[in-house]
Length: 331
Picture 1: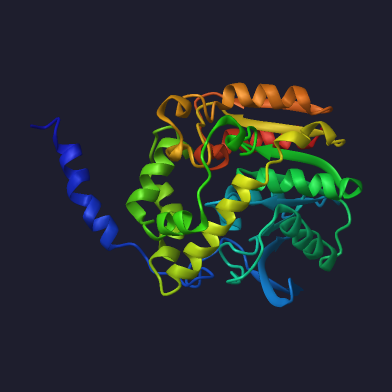
Picture 2: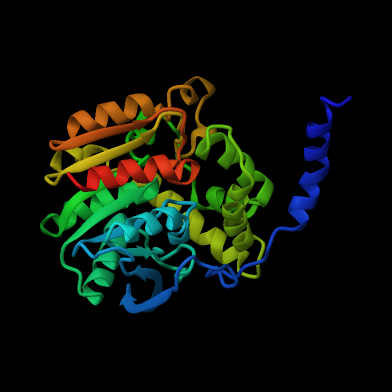
């Protein structure tokens, strides 16, 4: 009876957790970021848009270097909280934007999402801030964006850092069927705290769970629980299409700058894996193999592997991750 108690308590608590899901606006209104958020307003695709961003000055002795942090698909600039603190203490100026279509930024209904467009938007922000040389750190989808940014603006990128980037394989070429916008949209409308928590536990944290992870569940679930749910789901569906149909897989050999791949070895992320044939699913998202294969293709690459960590090593084990990050920034 005692052995069953934890499972019983979890079963009872799940409806309570769902009932306690916070409600945030379509631009994450109501969610508190770890550092002040500013807005960069500019014209893109014929409309005025706002990009929310954090610009955090060094707390340690300034080293004159700037680093831009690019979030993943279901992440935000806020999820870099631990790394921002570590980088600031080491003397770096840190810029952490939310891309158009995500989190604290605009989500235009008829926006054409491409990695080239998001890279150009990010370049515009950095120019607005007077930053002409930068280290680029991208996680998950942000790794795809960071790669595209580095290819478009190689003279401005001093170093490229990729944390469990998606796009290390071409899912469509491997046989994963595409989804229409309507299919993605219907899927995203069903998003809730329980589905987010289950996915994050199995993928981001290698089946580990700690209470502090719920903060990031609430961040994402709160947008899908608010008045702008349809707006958020539409942007999410459009950006899934961008990820699936705009591979960076074929461009890694073109990277000229020093590049570091940080790979949690328990990651199994693959976009639209749930739509793939059962036999194919087992072959997708094999990060131990993908990391090694891509590191060999990038001319000046270093591979850092985290045994036991999943898709989000910077959140799952920030102390271990931040030490590796700072060590490789010093090279």
